[in-house]
Structure formats: structure tokens, C-alpha cells
Length: 147
Image (cartoon, rainbow, N blue to C red; front, side, top):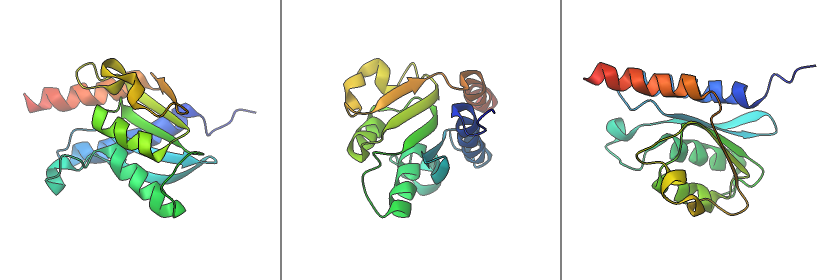
């Protein structure tokens, strides 16, 4: 029997968060934190709304997950994010000690994997390219509409 809770399923949930960001005029990046096939944290970019350069989707989602668990470490959790994390987010993800980070589209300009993959915690598994086409399309559409 096919497991409905696979990487694609959770990345599609992160895409729903990214669509919320786009509707609010934010760069469309969304994230969810998963523990035991349950979403325990959601987030999307809020940098414009909050006037806060640190209000990235990943930060919002890990804060929500930490609050849900009542703990700062997310070792048994996975983060699904539509765009490769930037170095700032990689640092926050390092400190949260996530078990796994799964991203959709690579960020060729600001992605942490491109600049310094060692920013991620050594015990964290990082996987890219899940639902990559859909994630990249959302970003392209957003920036094409801005021009």
C-alpha cells in the first residue's frame, strides 16, 4: 500500500504555505516541520509584513514546531521547504538540530549548499529536488509578475 505521507506530500504542504506568502506579496517560500508523519509547524515568508529580514519561512516553521514540542531541539523532525535555505536559515536549522532537511528548488544565488554546506548540523541529512519543478515555477511566476 502506498504511504500517502511521503516527501512529495509534505512538500506540497510547504507549497501551500508558499502560496499564502505569494498572496500577501511576499517571496513565495513555505515550510513545514514534520514529526511522526504529523505537521507540527508551518511557516511562510513574512519579511515584508513584519519588516523583519529574519522572518523567513524556515524560521517561522521551526519556531512553531519548537513551541508545539516545548523544546528547542528538533532532532526527530524533518523540515520541508520549497527553496534551498539561505546561510542565515542554515544557521538556525543547525542550532535546532533537525534530523532531516528536504528542499524543493535550489537557490543558485543565496543557497547555503552552494556557499557552505557545512553550515548544516553534521547529523542532519539534507535532500534537494523534491517537487523541484513546482517549487521553481512558483518562484518564477512571482518574479515575472513583479517585472
